[in-house]
Image 1 (cartoon, rainbow, N blue to C red):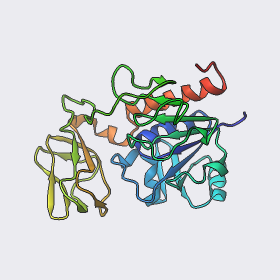
Image 2: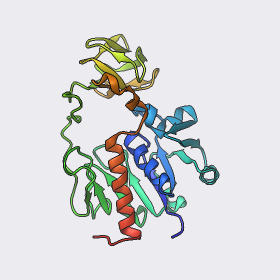
Image 3: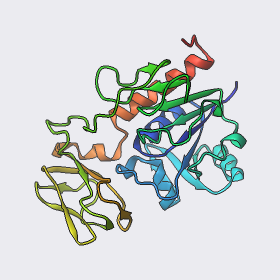
Image 4: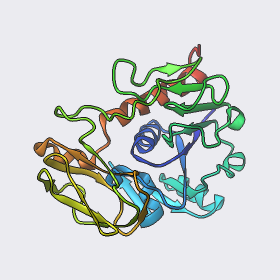
Length: 268
């Protein structure tokens, strides 16, 4: 196998960490996204190409394409093509060596074990040996990035990772349904109780002081309860808003390990 082609379902920040790592390792990477992605950490998500036509993350560009012919052209230009295909209908024609489900939906949205010679799924909602060949543990802690060849990842707790002593307080969910009007942007410093957005006529306020690490796009319609923003309590770490997270890098490395073990090493 001269070049390994990998199709990644999803283009959010975790998927982007995986795609970036694979691209850096010399693999061909194609991202399949939905029509209206809702990534929070938009500055480090190739899914933003759906809206902006192109999204650059740490020196690598994701470029929106509309056909398989354009996929080929962008691969030749050393970019990551981003194709709107939420059902994965193009996978058969793309003939990938690997399919990675990186949607992080906490459930299987249509990935099947026979989609490619190697199918890797991230996080809960999948069973290795049934839905996919390998599951990657995505929960922070001792087992983050562990490859699971039998069984499932740990169940979703609903609690985000602890940063600076804060966990659930960091993540903001929409208190209402309606049009989102962003008041603050990614990278802005905020105080506790400050308004960062308005949904419909409802103000959305922070629960802690810090830096806006991620927020949904201005002008989209959001549902009540959807995750819409993330605040990092570390004022001095604003630069992290624009770089791939430690978690995404770890999971990306795990996917590389899974691919190498399958095609070049000794797979369990």
